[in-house]
Image 1 (cartoon, helix red, strand yellow):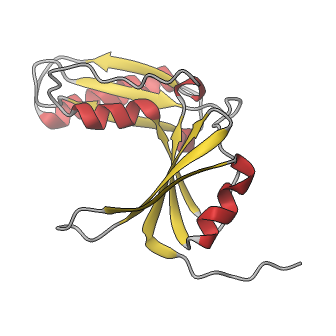
Image 2: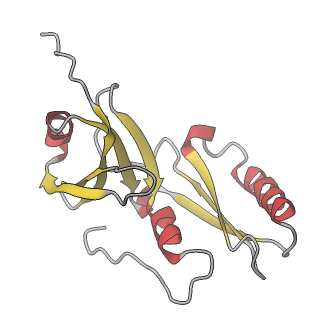
Length: 171
């Protein structure tokens, strides 16, 4: 039976994370650049029900948080310098450390404290063989995979004064 095409809302985002046997979902409505996003709905569902719940909500975009067990993370420290020099040095280090371990679409690079005394590169990859924890979704849903460590890094900011961590007994 052919599936009826649903018009999806591009400014409605589902933030999804596997927790135990279920998937925790936070539906967020983007309001524009000057207005904060707002939470529309929060729910938990089994993985096999995720796609239908997202399509029923007419959500056009999913930000899927990759569990730490599905990612490889490396940090690189480089000497301080100009922002462009630091970024270039970290990118070169990242390329040499990843060298064929993961496809370009399965790797990422974050820069922390780029203008500080100890610029750090956060190199993350999620090889094909590692389980992302979420089912494959319909092709019309735009899925972006986000490593858990990247979520923590953005919360910590450029000059963290305390430790950030996710403590999850379910893994």
